[in-house]
Length: 130
Image 1 (spheres, rainbow, N blue to C red):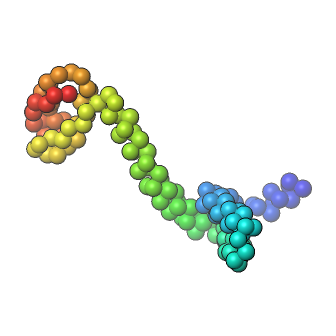
Image 2 (tube, helix red, strand yellow; image 1 turned 90 degrees about the vertical axis):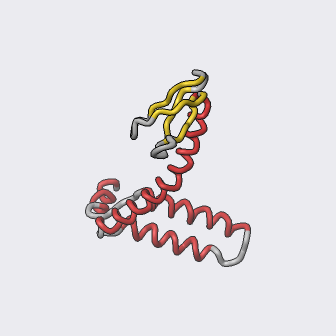
């Protein structure tokens, strides 16, 4: 049986991250439609059809490009939250200063007193408390 499925899927795109997301959205909409009888289940079936169309498609390049666009959007969206988390973690041990000449951000360890900071980009020096 697995051999038949494997032979059937040869030359087809298969499951990727976008297909998984579409599948989860369809399942969530189906669960919501159990509680609210307002015809929303049609939307979940349309999403499932799109999901299975993507999985069984023979146009691999098109599906790959769609998935790459989705991953770019996803990384941009979740990457912002990762940067905020990293910044918050760095604020415990470091102070961030902006060079008055070139506006480059410079990270300096906290608790060192007054120090002379040299900008790595323009070599300008300025004194700040860390």
